[in-house]
Length: 295
Image 1 (tube, rainbow, N blue to C red):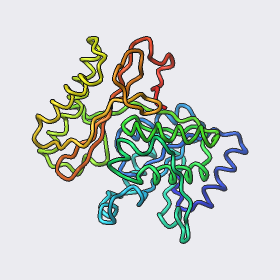
Image 2 (cartoon, helix red, strand yellow):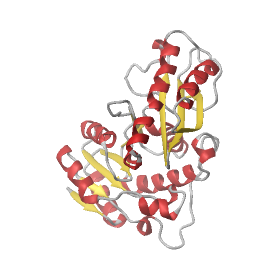
Image 3 (tube, rainbow, N blue to C red):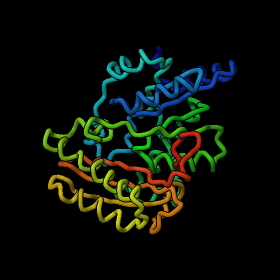
Image 4 (cartoon, rainbow, N blue to C red):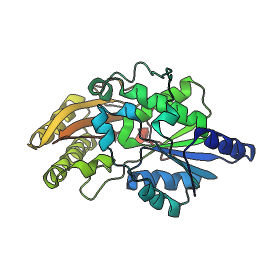
């Protein structure tokens, strides 16, 4: 396995791989890897000829320089996790490598980026889309693997890929969860023991909403009420937002009949902000391929 830090070297390599007609599977990450990332890598290994994982801590995704500096970084640890599961290359550029002095070009996916996470974190998806288009242009993958935990991000990037006619297939992988249902996230390490226990309420609340849907309830308002009540009963949880939207345009839904509905939630535990989501769909609406219908 080779660790590459320069975009020029990565571009030469991927040009060679494409000339050899090798299908590249790409998993973009910010490091601090966990089982959720590894599940995407394993699927990339199954679908592609060559697997490339990026580890790029994008300063544009943080609210402050202090938050950026505190983000966990351990490239050696991440490499040790990736080497045994068939990753050929790690692309680990610096911020200056990706955004050299004078950089002034950005991607804005309008209509999807200014709701939910976009309301709480203005400009966040502009940074995400810009960083990913740069990585896509450098790596030139055939398949890009993203996680359902960042559902809104996946919907936005699929839209970007379609709009810009990029020859890329976005593969959305199911959320990998810890024993109590908490979605695997690099942020989980920031939780105190009490906050970590409390954070399990997110999945419990989403499951209550899913159980209500599966019992025949199709009112988004009633499902939201049940989920909200469960979360607000946890004193350490500070709810940011809770929404039920369609899974393609992220438009709010009232009636969930014959819909692929995405339930998204964000809440803060202490100083740690977590997101989670769940898909609600009737049996006849489920994908025949087993792929998640997002975007």
